Image 1 (tube, rainbow, N blue to C red):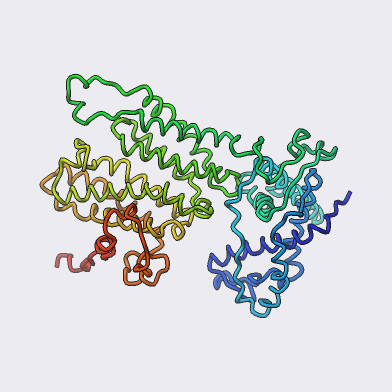
Image 2 (image 1 turned 90 degrees about the vertical axis):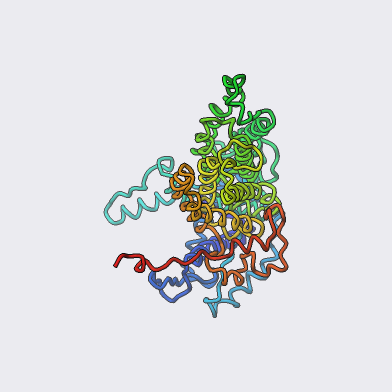
Length: 537
């Protein structure tokens, strides 16, 4: 039986096919490709970097047929699409005028597809997308087998059931189906499931007990609060907050007293470092793709809770380092796993991203900058007792900097570089704080000759100097400003010196006067003499 799409969905097919083409063209443009009459890898030209409606009919069909087959599969599985509440009908006029504006000049085509990564999707719709991806694989496999039979037979490594494919092989199918579900939700299409005999035999749908599931976000089985990850994150946040107030940190001098020399760690702290943190490390190390993959289905609430858990756990470790004892390495490893689950790209695109970054992520960078600069000031002033960890106020242990702070900051900058979000996150107040971190790292790595009278300190600084270099490299890989070419920063719109007289950066991020920060941070490092001059004659 041939399933025909309603006429009301023809506009959806055309618009989503155009959206897929814009996404593809946008990715090529980001890689440096431009329009050209022929495909040339060396010159990075491609003939299809042009508006969708100016493509040949064959190229348009390559987009339209997969979309049509996916919508037909949805109808076979018992799902219907209600178009009564869509909100992009105003784009029809622009869609009709667009070919006449750009067909004569394909070089002026600038693809700007909607970013749908931050759209929340219920669990039922994720399952639907997976079934549609399975169906797309079966369609491809059937066509591939027919092609092989036409040439006399043959085999192909992907002619296997969908469940056997790897995640990388499934991505080619998931990308279309998950993007279609998010596209429907973004533009207000309502999905409804009707319990028909055909859908019940296929086994795809929420079941007869819930005939209508869609995009209203009702609190049922598909609500994010009913997921295991959401519940686990809620419990972990509550546990870390309670540990922040209940765990008491002993004074450094108590370990030398007779009365407190035999005290043991509290039971709550033992549970945290022996049970909770290994569980968190293992779970988030295995499930990090669930939070970062835009097609995995983690809700924006779960992504925000993962970022909040990292910030709270780092604050707990920073304030009560002594309570963790010899299990500090386990906590640092847990923090690294949590960093890799933070979906920075989705967080910076939410409507209240500026407030969330200021309240949650900015304090982490501010604490790091404060601790590093405090350690530098103590070293410059010769207050060596303040870096041993035996003084509580106005001091920062050098072991805390080397064992906790630097590995955590390095992992954070590497993650930002990997997600390509430095130009969106490290701006404004966060960029000022990163300049302070950069200044402190540079001074820690170049001023160790002043402490030759303290051999233990010189050995400690030299032993961890590679970590400083790795942290600087990670910062340079994600920083949106060429900080070694300060004379060019004023022309960079992402730089804090671009129209800086009109900018207003908070004291929370700076910690000091902006002019003094610029005076210290924007001075380029001294130039080294040519190596040939230092060689013996």
